[in-house]
Length: 305
Image (spheres, rainbow, N blue to C red):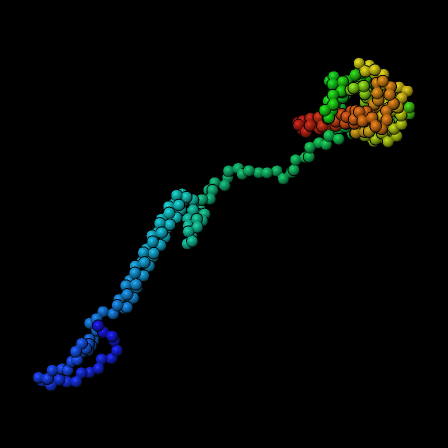
């Protein structure tokens, strides 16, 4: 076994003289070899083995990465090839497809789509058709304003009673309303009565040549529309207090008078009477607006003159 360290030179021996040895002593040192001792250097061998293992591992990792890159390149090439078609373009140095002359249309004499720069006119406004008798030309009658035998508003069902239509506007009014209608040029008054659970109401629609006249009649209202009995509805609002209201839309002014068929006086706490007045006023408004909407729709679809 070698312990390392310097080797000391041996004294030359005389011929026939034996070297001195002590019992159980270490053998004399051996001469050095040019590149190390004859005994292997285990530390160096271990380092060399570890280095070889590291090189082998790096070779395996590098080979795997190269294989992955090669597969990705093959897939990318296949995708590019499948998405290309002859004559649609060429690729630049970065692989991007660019248009060529063969991709451009060769025939420019074909007609191209054109778009009008003139915006279509806006649809007609329904209010325009109910603002004056010059445009409001649709047929008008008690049946067209108050159709059917029943009316349902807000879940409440009203039975329709009598209807009437007259050009003598003042004859179907109470108090000063007749004079108001006459001064403002009333052409006609159409009435209808509805009843539910002992509460009756008459709706009167007064027709004027223009919107301005109808608006003035509403603002000057005094008195009320005369109640219309008959067709299953008893007399009401005679010599008692009833609920009167007035409003206008376009060239139409509309009036309501609601009360009890038993002659009871209406008070502010009679919710049923107020609900009835609200429902029938809303119905009159809707019917007048529907006239304007129908005429505007017809004008929009009519062929140009």
